[in-house]
Image (cartoon, rainbow, N blue to C red):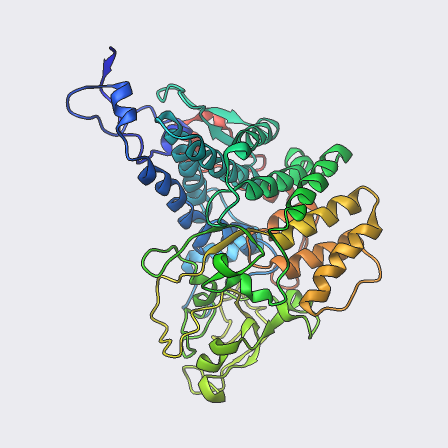
Length: 509
């Protein structure tokens, strides 16, 4: 029997994906390869694969800031001495980032860490169900890496870790994602939403086909009729399952019990009060110090984005039951005078009325005052009567894929293949349940706006804007001119290039 020293790779070394040639640590003595791989705690390894998603996807420094802060629905204004952070948020919104940007570097490493973990677990003696979950999770992280960086360092199971990984370009990465998802589907369950499931795999597959031509050429995206037919077919399978439905209460999908009570969730990241990621940032980042729940008084949305919503559209913001009764705060977009429990008008730190104003024009100079900017509270904090703002571990499950997106993907594929009439019916179904007036016609511009209204701050805005050809557009005074084409991709970090020169830098950097 072959005896060998086994490297402790399960904890992960993302450099092994980008070109590291030194294993972390070796066990003292020797065991057989078969004995080692048969003796591992598979449930713990699988849990580690899920947990690895929390930082890159739930934190404000993760995929969200690359997808939304770089777009037109989020901004991180410098407020005098607050929130400058060496300009890291500013350059993301203004599309002037450099390869040494910490957010860009960290997300590349963290996403590849997921790819590594979900590949590594497949070397063990695992069930078909565990393998299928790992394949789905790997496909999701691979999709994000391809979307953001345009290429993916990748190792097949059993590849010699001392060799550099292969570099998947857009075509190869697309093929790998499809291979993983097709292999996973037969052994994935029906749910719950916080577990990899076959409906999530089909939704991700639809999203891949929808973006396939964009990933291949972001400056001139194409939409092959066969790919659009795949989108429609996959979305129809999800619709026909009968497991999902639009909620009349838009924010139900973002409450602390969302995975248990909302029919919109297809895939989510589980959080509990005892163990959670940083989903709380979705209200902490913008709420003022004097509000309850209190926050960091930082991020906001732009007036031009807020103005896309009709007044009666519940997605724009509503009073929300016990939460508003117990705190005075609304959910959605917060604009104008803010109130506490019992309708008490709140004040800022200087004793002036706490009025969130629309303008964040002075992002460059850092002269934005503490009350500037329309704030966003999309995830609903726990609605307890004694809520004190002290729950750092929020138990809202983080939404990754949901039903409204499936409907909008089908509508887009129909529109792009000449069937505007059926696409319009779908979009008006969504608008009606959200309280918005019906469209009389549908085109790419108002469909893009509808995706923005429905999916704001859900880490899809950049992806959508690129696909529709508007990511580089000027955004008022905060980004006054069209950006260079190089910003359609994020740069490959220098440490990854040094570890594996085969990666190559993206054009323009």
